[in-house]
Length: 165
Image (cartoon, rainbow, N blue to C red; front, side, top):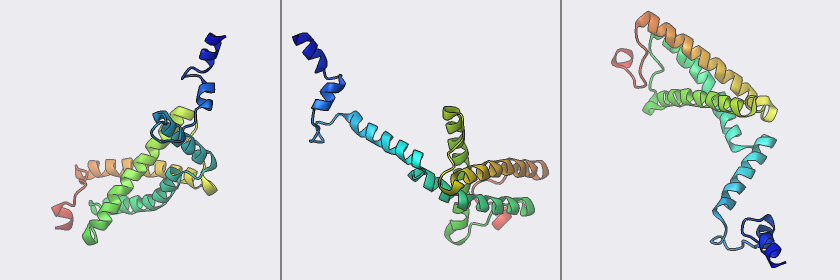
């Protein structure tokens, strides 16, 4: 009888954990916070209200037109966007490229884990941003390839003297 009672109240059993009251944050196990964060992330991804999803939607809707402008400028002038006041336009251009690559990487990761891409998100915007990001990535590869074939170089991330000197 005592052995079965000890088995039920061993620190790894679920009944032991249900009987414990973790009121003091110091006595809470470390995994408690991690489980809470994971469950919040799962709740957010199921309902389409995740912070990452909203950030990806906002970033994607801003970055894809910026990349289109950048690629058009690169194709017509041989240079990227001008730095702008305080380097703001150049910074927006660089962040836009990073966001598109990040969204595509997130989509590919989700595809390998779940078998499908990103969820549609609110109003289907996350799915639209995912598609636009793939199109932008293809356009980047095509325009950079043409730039390399025609000019022999791809401009670096910093403004070059021949472009804005």
